[in-house]
Amino acid sequence: MDVPERERFEARDDDGALAGVLTYQLTGNIIAYTHTQGEEGADTALARAAMDDAKAKGRVVVPLCPFLSGWLDEHHEYDKILARSTRKVK
Image 1 (tube, one colour):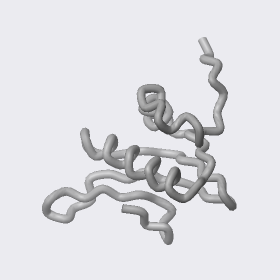
Image 2 (cartoon, one colour):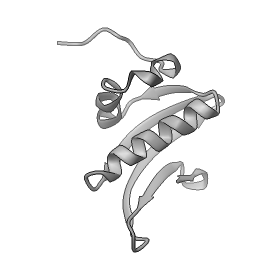
Image 3 (cartoon, one colour):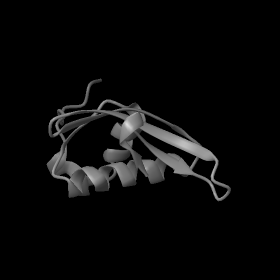
Image 4 (cartoon, rainbow, N blue to C red):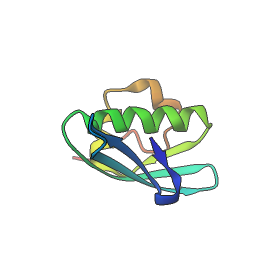
């Protein structure tokens, strides 16, 4: 769930406890995802929720977070909204 006043997406477990967060910075139509932290499974759910939200809102995504960047390497359905180099650094 997006919590814009805290500039983050939150995942909660069945008891309502915080299970993970994905932080971002929004400037105009550009959203930079900066950090993901959470329990296994929550991080993936956060990545999908954040990317689906950005896609629905027509935003350009800058994936600064290493987890999200790696996740996006496997989820090419979001390639059209990404602002990042396709060149891999060795």
